Figure (cartoon, rainbow, N blue to C red):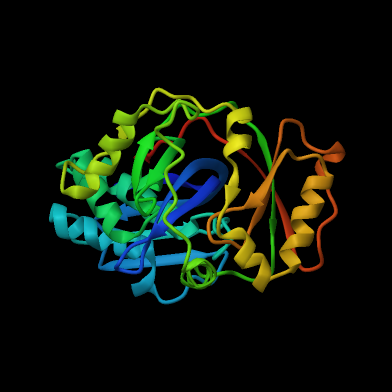
Amino acid sequence: MPTAKIEAQAKVNLFLRILGREPSGYHQLETLFQRVSLADDVTIRTEVEGRSLECSGADVGPVEKNLAWRAALAFRDVAAWPDTFAIEIVKNIPVGGGLGGGSADAGAVLRALNAMAPNTLPDETIFAIARALGADVPFLASTTATAIGFVRGDVIAACPAPHQRDLILLVPPFSVSSADAFGWYAAAHEKEPRKRSRMATPASGIALATVEAAIARDGGGPTVPVSSEHAFSWREIATLAGNDLQDVVVAHHPELSRAIALLMAAGSPLVQMTGSGSTVFGVFSKRPSGGVIATPQGFSALHAQTLTRVADVEVS
């Protein structure tokens, strides 16, 4: 029975800056995506009876709303294959924590099915399917460990990965929906002028042509990621770091401020919320003694590393 296995690796946002709100209500942003070692385990089998999805380790809601399920159906609609499939996911990534777990599963399904398909779909087709599924899916369906996200985060420019660093993730006992976080931000900043991009400047080291080429993909051009030769150093990342959604999310969930303070006290030079929350992470060149820090009541602490390469699909 044809089988594909893949680690669906999570992401953190090393910076996330909201530039302005579109007439449609969506926000344009720029962010630096970074893959991390925390991952769900995804297995796909074809030549089975019917179509199925089984998840263990977390409650992910109805099957028909699951991004991995939707990714498989979208691939089937475009490729006319497979007629049947069985997807098994072991959840290790916290649900609703801003770590991209559902999007990572969807990206893994797209990559796995394409590795198994009798007729492989081109990258631009996979990227187009991914964009239709959600803003984080294009990055998490790619084979790049680090990338700048433009537009809604769904147009990416791949970058060389920075040196590996340790992470401590503090996960609260609640999630934050992206709709809520962006809604809170819009209410708090509705009268502010649009921000200018900090990319494509001499200080960033990103070539203007790279940024323009990436954003042009949103105007009907070939939907494939572009590449940048600029390698962000951790020093540069620290100067760009920040998450524009953090203040409004902390205002609604002040317990997150305690987690931020603990990671800073542990010596992390870069502490912030990832995505729209609710997970807070700290980057360490060397873990705190014993690898343990104080954890706020109800929170869980997870250890991970930033990655320099994306997991391969294993087909048997």
